[in-house]
Image 1 (cartoon, rainbow, N blue to C red):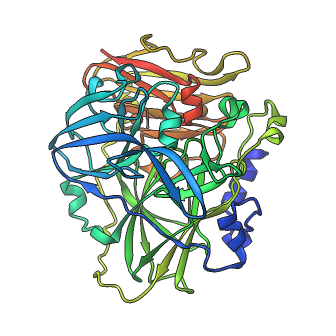
Image 2: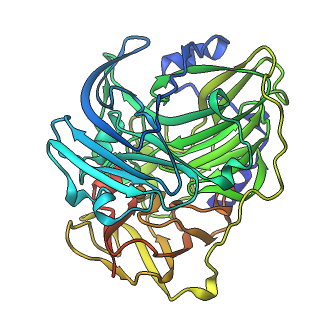
Length: 487
Ligand code: C2O
Ligand code: CU
Ligand code: CU
């Protein structure tokens, strides 16, 4: 019953969208006030060098309306700089840890040797960790963030995250919008207390169940942002960088947009859609034509309400939620102000964007069940166990192709992420089917309560120890993570 509802609501016309009253002053105040998006969207700077420093340090950040964050930042920036690199090139990154906590950086979606992957056992408490690797994979919208055990959620929340773009020739041939016509968007939620402090204080319930759900939405670190665009085609590269919140991206007036890429780069074919569910760590690469479908000179990006399937256990828990609006509530994200004329010539997109080369089911060497659960006594588990730093939970042979079945028997969503690979989602039980992004390469997939999601992947990475985990960062920090070894 719940699942049917989910589909119905997800497919509803946006005209029926009612914005709830929960939203933080800046948004709810302004429901009656068209000038509510009053802060300019920050665009992170870019690093294209092949050798550079990435320094994490503490910072006191003042946001509009008296809000304040005692946070961390990379190279003096929130979000961190966008790293832009070319396929086949080598890179040398010196990660300097000045935050006063253990940390290590993980390049989410990149396929790099174990010692370069940011395994939590490689944390440093200060000083420098040297990363050297080659970009051996397709163009795509990857990202980076810390990965120390138990405190990943806090460090990402307090500001440590940035984009990592890889470019290649296949992508270049498409002549996609670039420069000012390519806009990176990192969407995150935060909790603000009565004195305006952004605080990281997940409750017991949030640690055990939902993950931290904040009441202030930031895009590129800024609440209620606007961005000026010309009436033409833009490429938006979007990351859900939140600890736990799932967004159902759409335009307020229901205008369509074109999905061209997912976690692991270009889709085989572009898809015209009007909404897109994005779990923590998932990315979307979309094209929006601001010259069509938006009348008022503005395009408002929102998260549409969606229903959360329930696993049927502990139903009462939902009423106990405290803090930000519950998962699935709708709200605004930002506004694009459409002005002037477009200076970029329109280009047509080919029917085929890229060669998929997905592994075929018949080539799978084995199927591995991965059971996701929440035990009242132990907390979040994978196959009945919580993370241990050196214990090898799964062994896979280098070069093998495997099907992993993520089985969610808990009553909370788990966005499951595997390091060292990109995978193809084969099927999802329970009627939701594949998401538009799941027609392409993925490294993170949302497993709703009661669902089983099957993915296929080939383990071509260098031998060594890697991890897979839930990307709800409270779940991850609470032990919902496991080691796998490529042998
Ligand atoms: Cu973005 Cu191990 O994660
Ligand atoms: Cu990762
Ligand atoms: Cu989880």
